[in-house]
Length: 169
Image 1 (cartoon, rainbow, N blue to C red):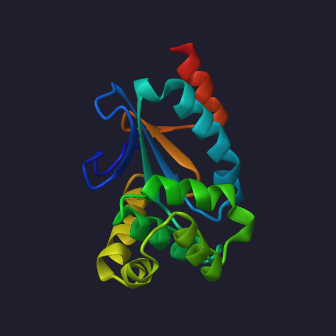
Image 2: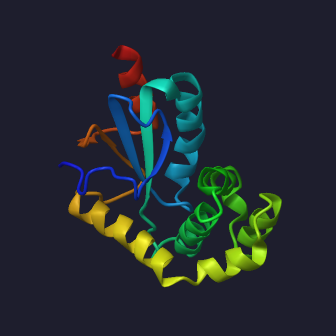
């Protein structure tokens, strides 16, 4: 399966925006497998970030994970204040503490304007962004998290496999 739609400026991009290698992760903030992959991906970016364009797309499995959607909305609300990756990392680093209250605490810890953050979390445009990411995952054949795409092609494997593949190239 290939990635639909292609990566664009609507996406959250980390690393080298002009890199030849683009990795897209479809993730759920409450998924334990995504949580386990997070430190591996952080290390990969620390080591190889200059060679990679890394993209995160929301794929909240809301039926299974009560806080997956609120966490995705929190990350998107933080993005409006320029702190998407900080919120993204903070949620994954504290995944076992997820709750609505905890998301507000993270907003404070990241020095966000908390009133603005609360208001932004209710915005229809953020709901549409999360839903759009989810729908793009469905169109791309994502059926679980985390799912990775390398240069637009679905990658059969987890974060460890991804790192191994990068070291081989």
